[in-house]
Image 1 (cartoon, one colour):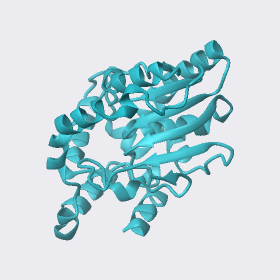
Image 2 (cartoon, one colour):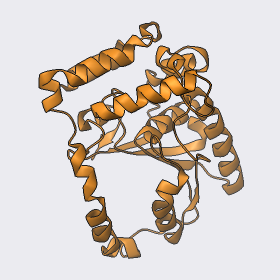
Image 3 (cartoon, rainbow, N blue to C red):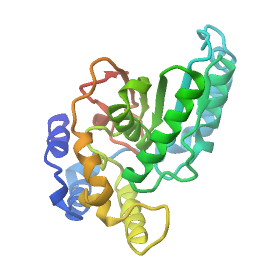
Length: 247
């Protein structure tokens, strides 16, 4: 399974066009693959998990090393905005880190355009703090963070990703794939702030992004990929980036 995921990334050339999404849908809805799909229903456990988190001593700062003013940049996941990482940001600030968001209300736009905005915010944050920033990204935000580090390694101290499908960006639940297709159609019709079908082809501003997604990871940068085998959205196997320490 892991070999197939790696192969799908290496063979996903821009010339694949919008058929890339159609092939992904067929693959996810194939009988055997459908049985191995992420358990979407388990996402409903978040209220219980939140209560567990809030009652943990680590959440109150027990045993947490001091941040000493080190900068951190937080990038939200697909169809989410900066507000989705507000709790994480508050916890980091209480520990002494200086955080900034990605400036996203909804992470559903073209990756090429998003990276330009992220680079600008990273430059501003590192200039203000005078130090390299750790990038923390959730799901698609982690994938964008990986690209951001590849483009601005001199301004990044490391990368932490949370459930990010590095080996195959479309290794997600079939219902999420359908949603991506709908968003792509709306973006192609001119709805602002949404990715379009040309993003699947790797054309336009995304052409460079496709190449960077396959580029070798800078060895000097630390990379931690955190995943859960109970993830209801992302196939956890796609989080096993060989360049990362996997937890």
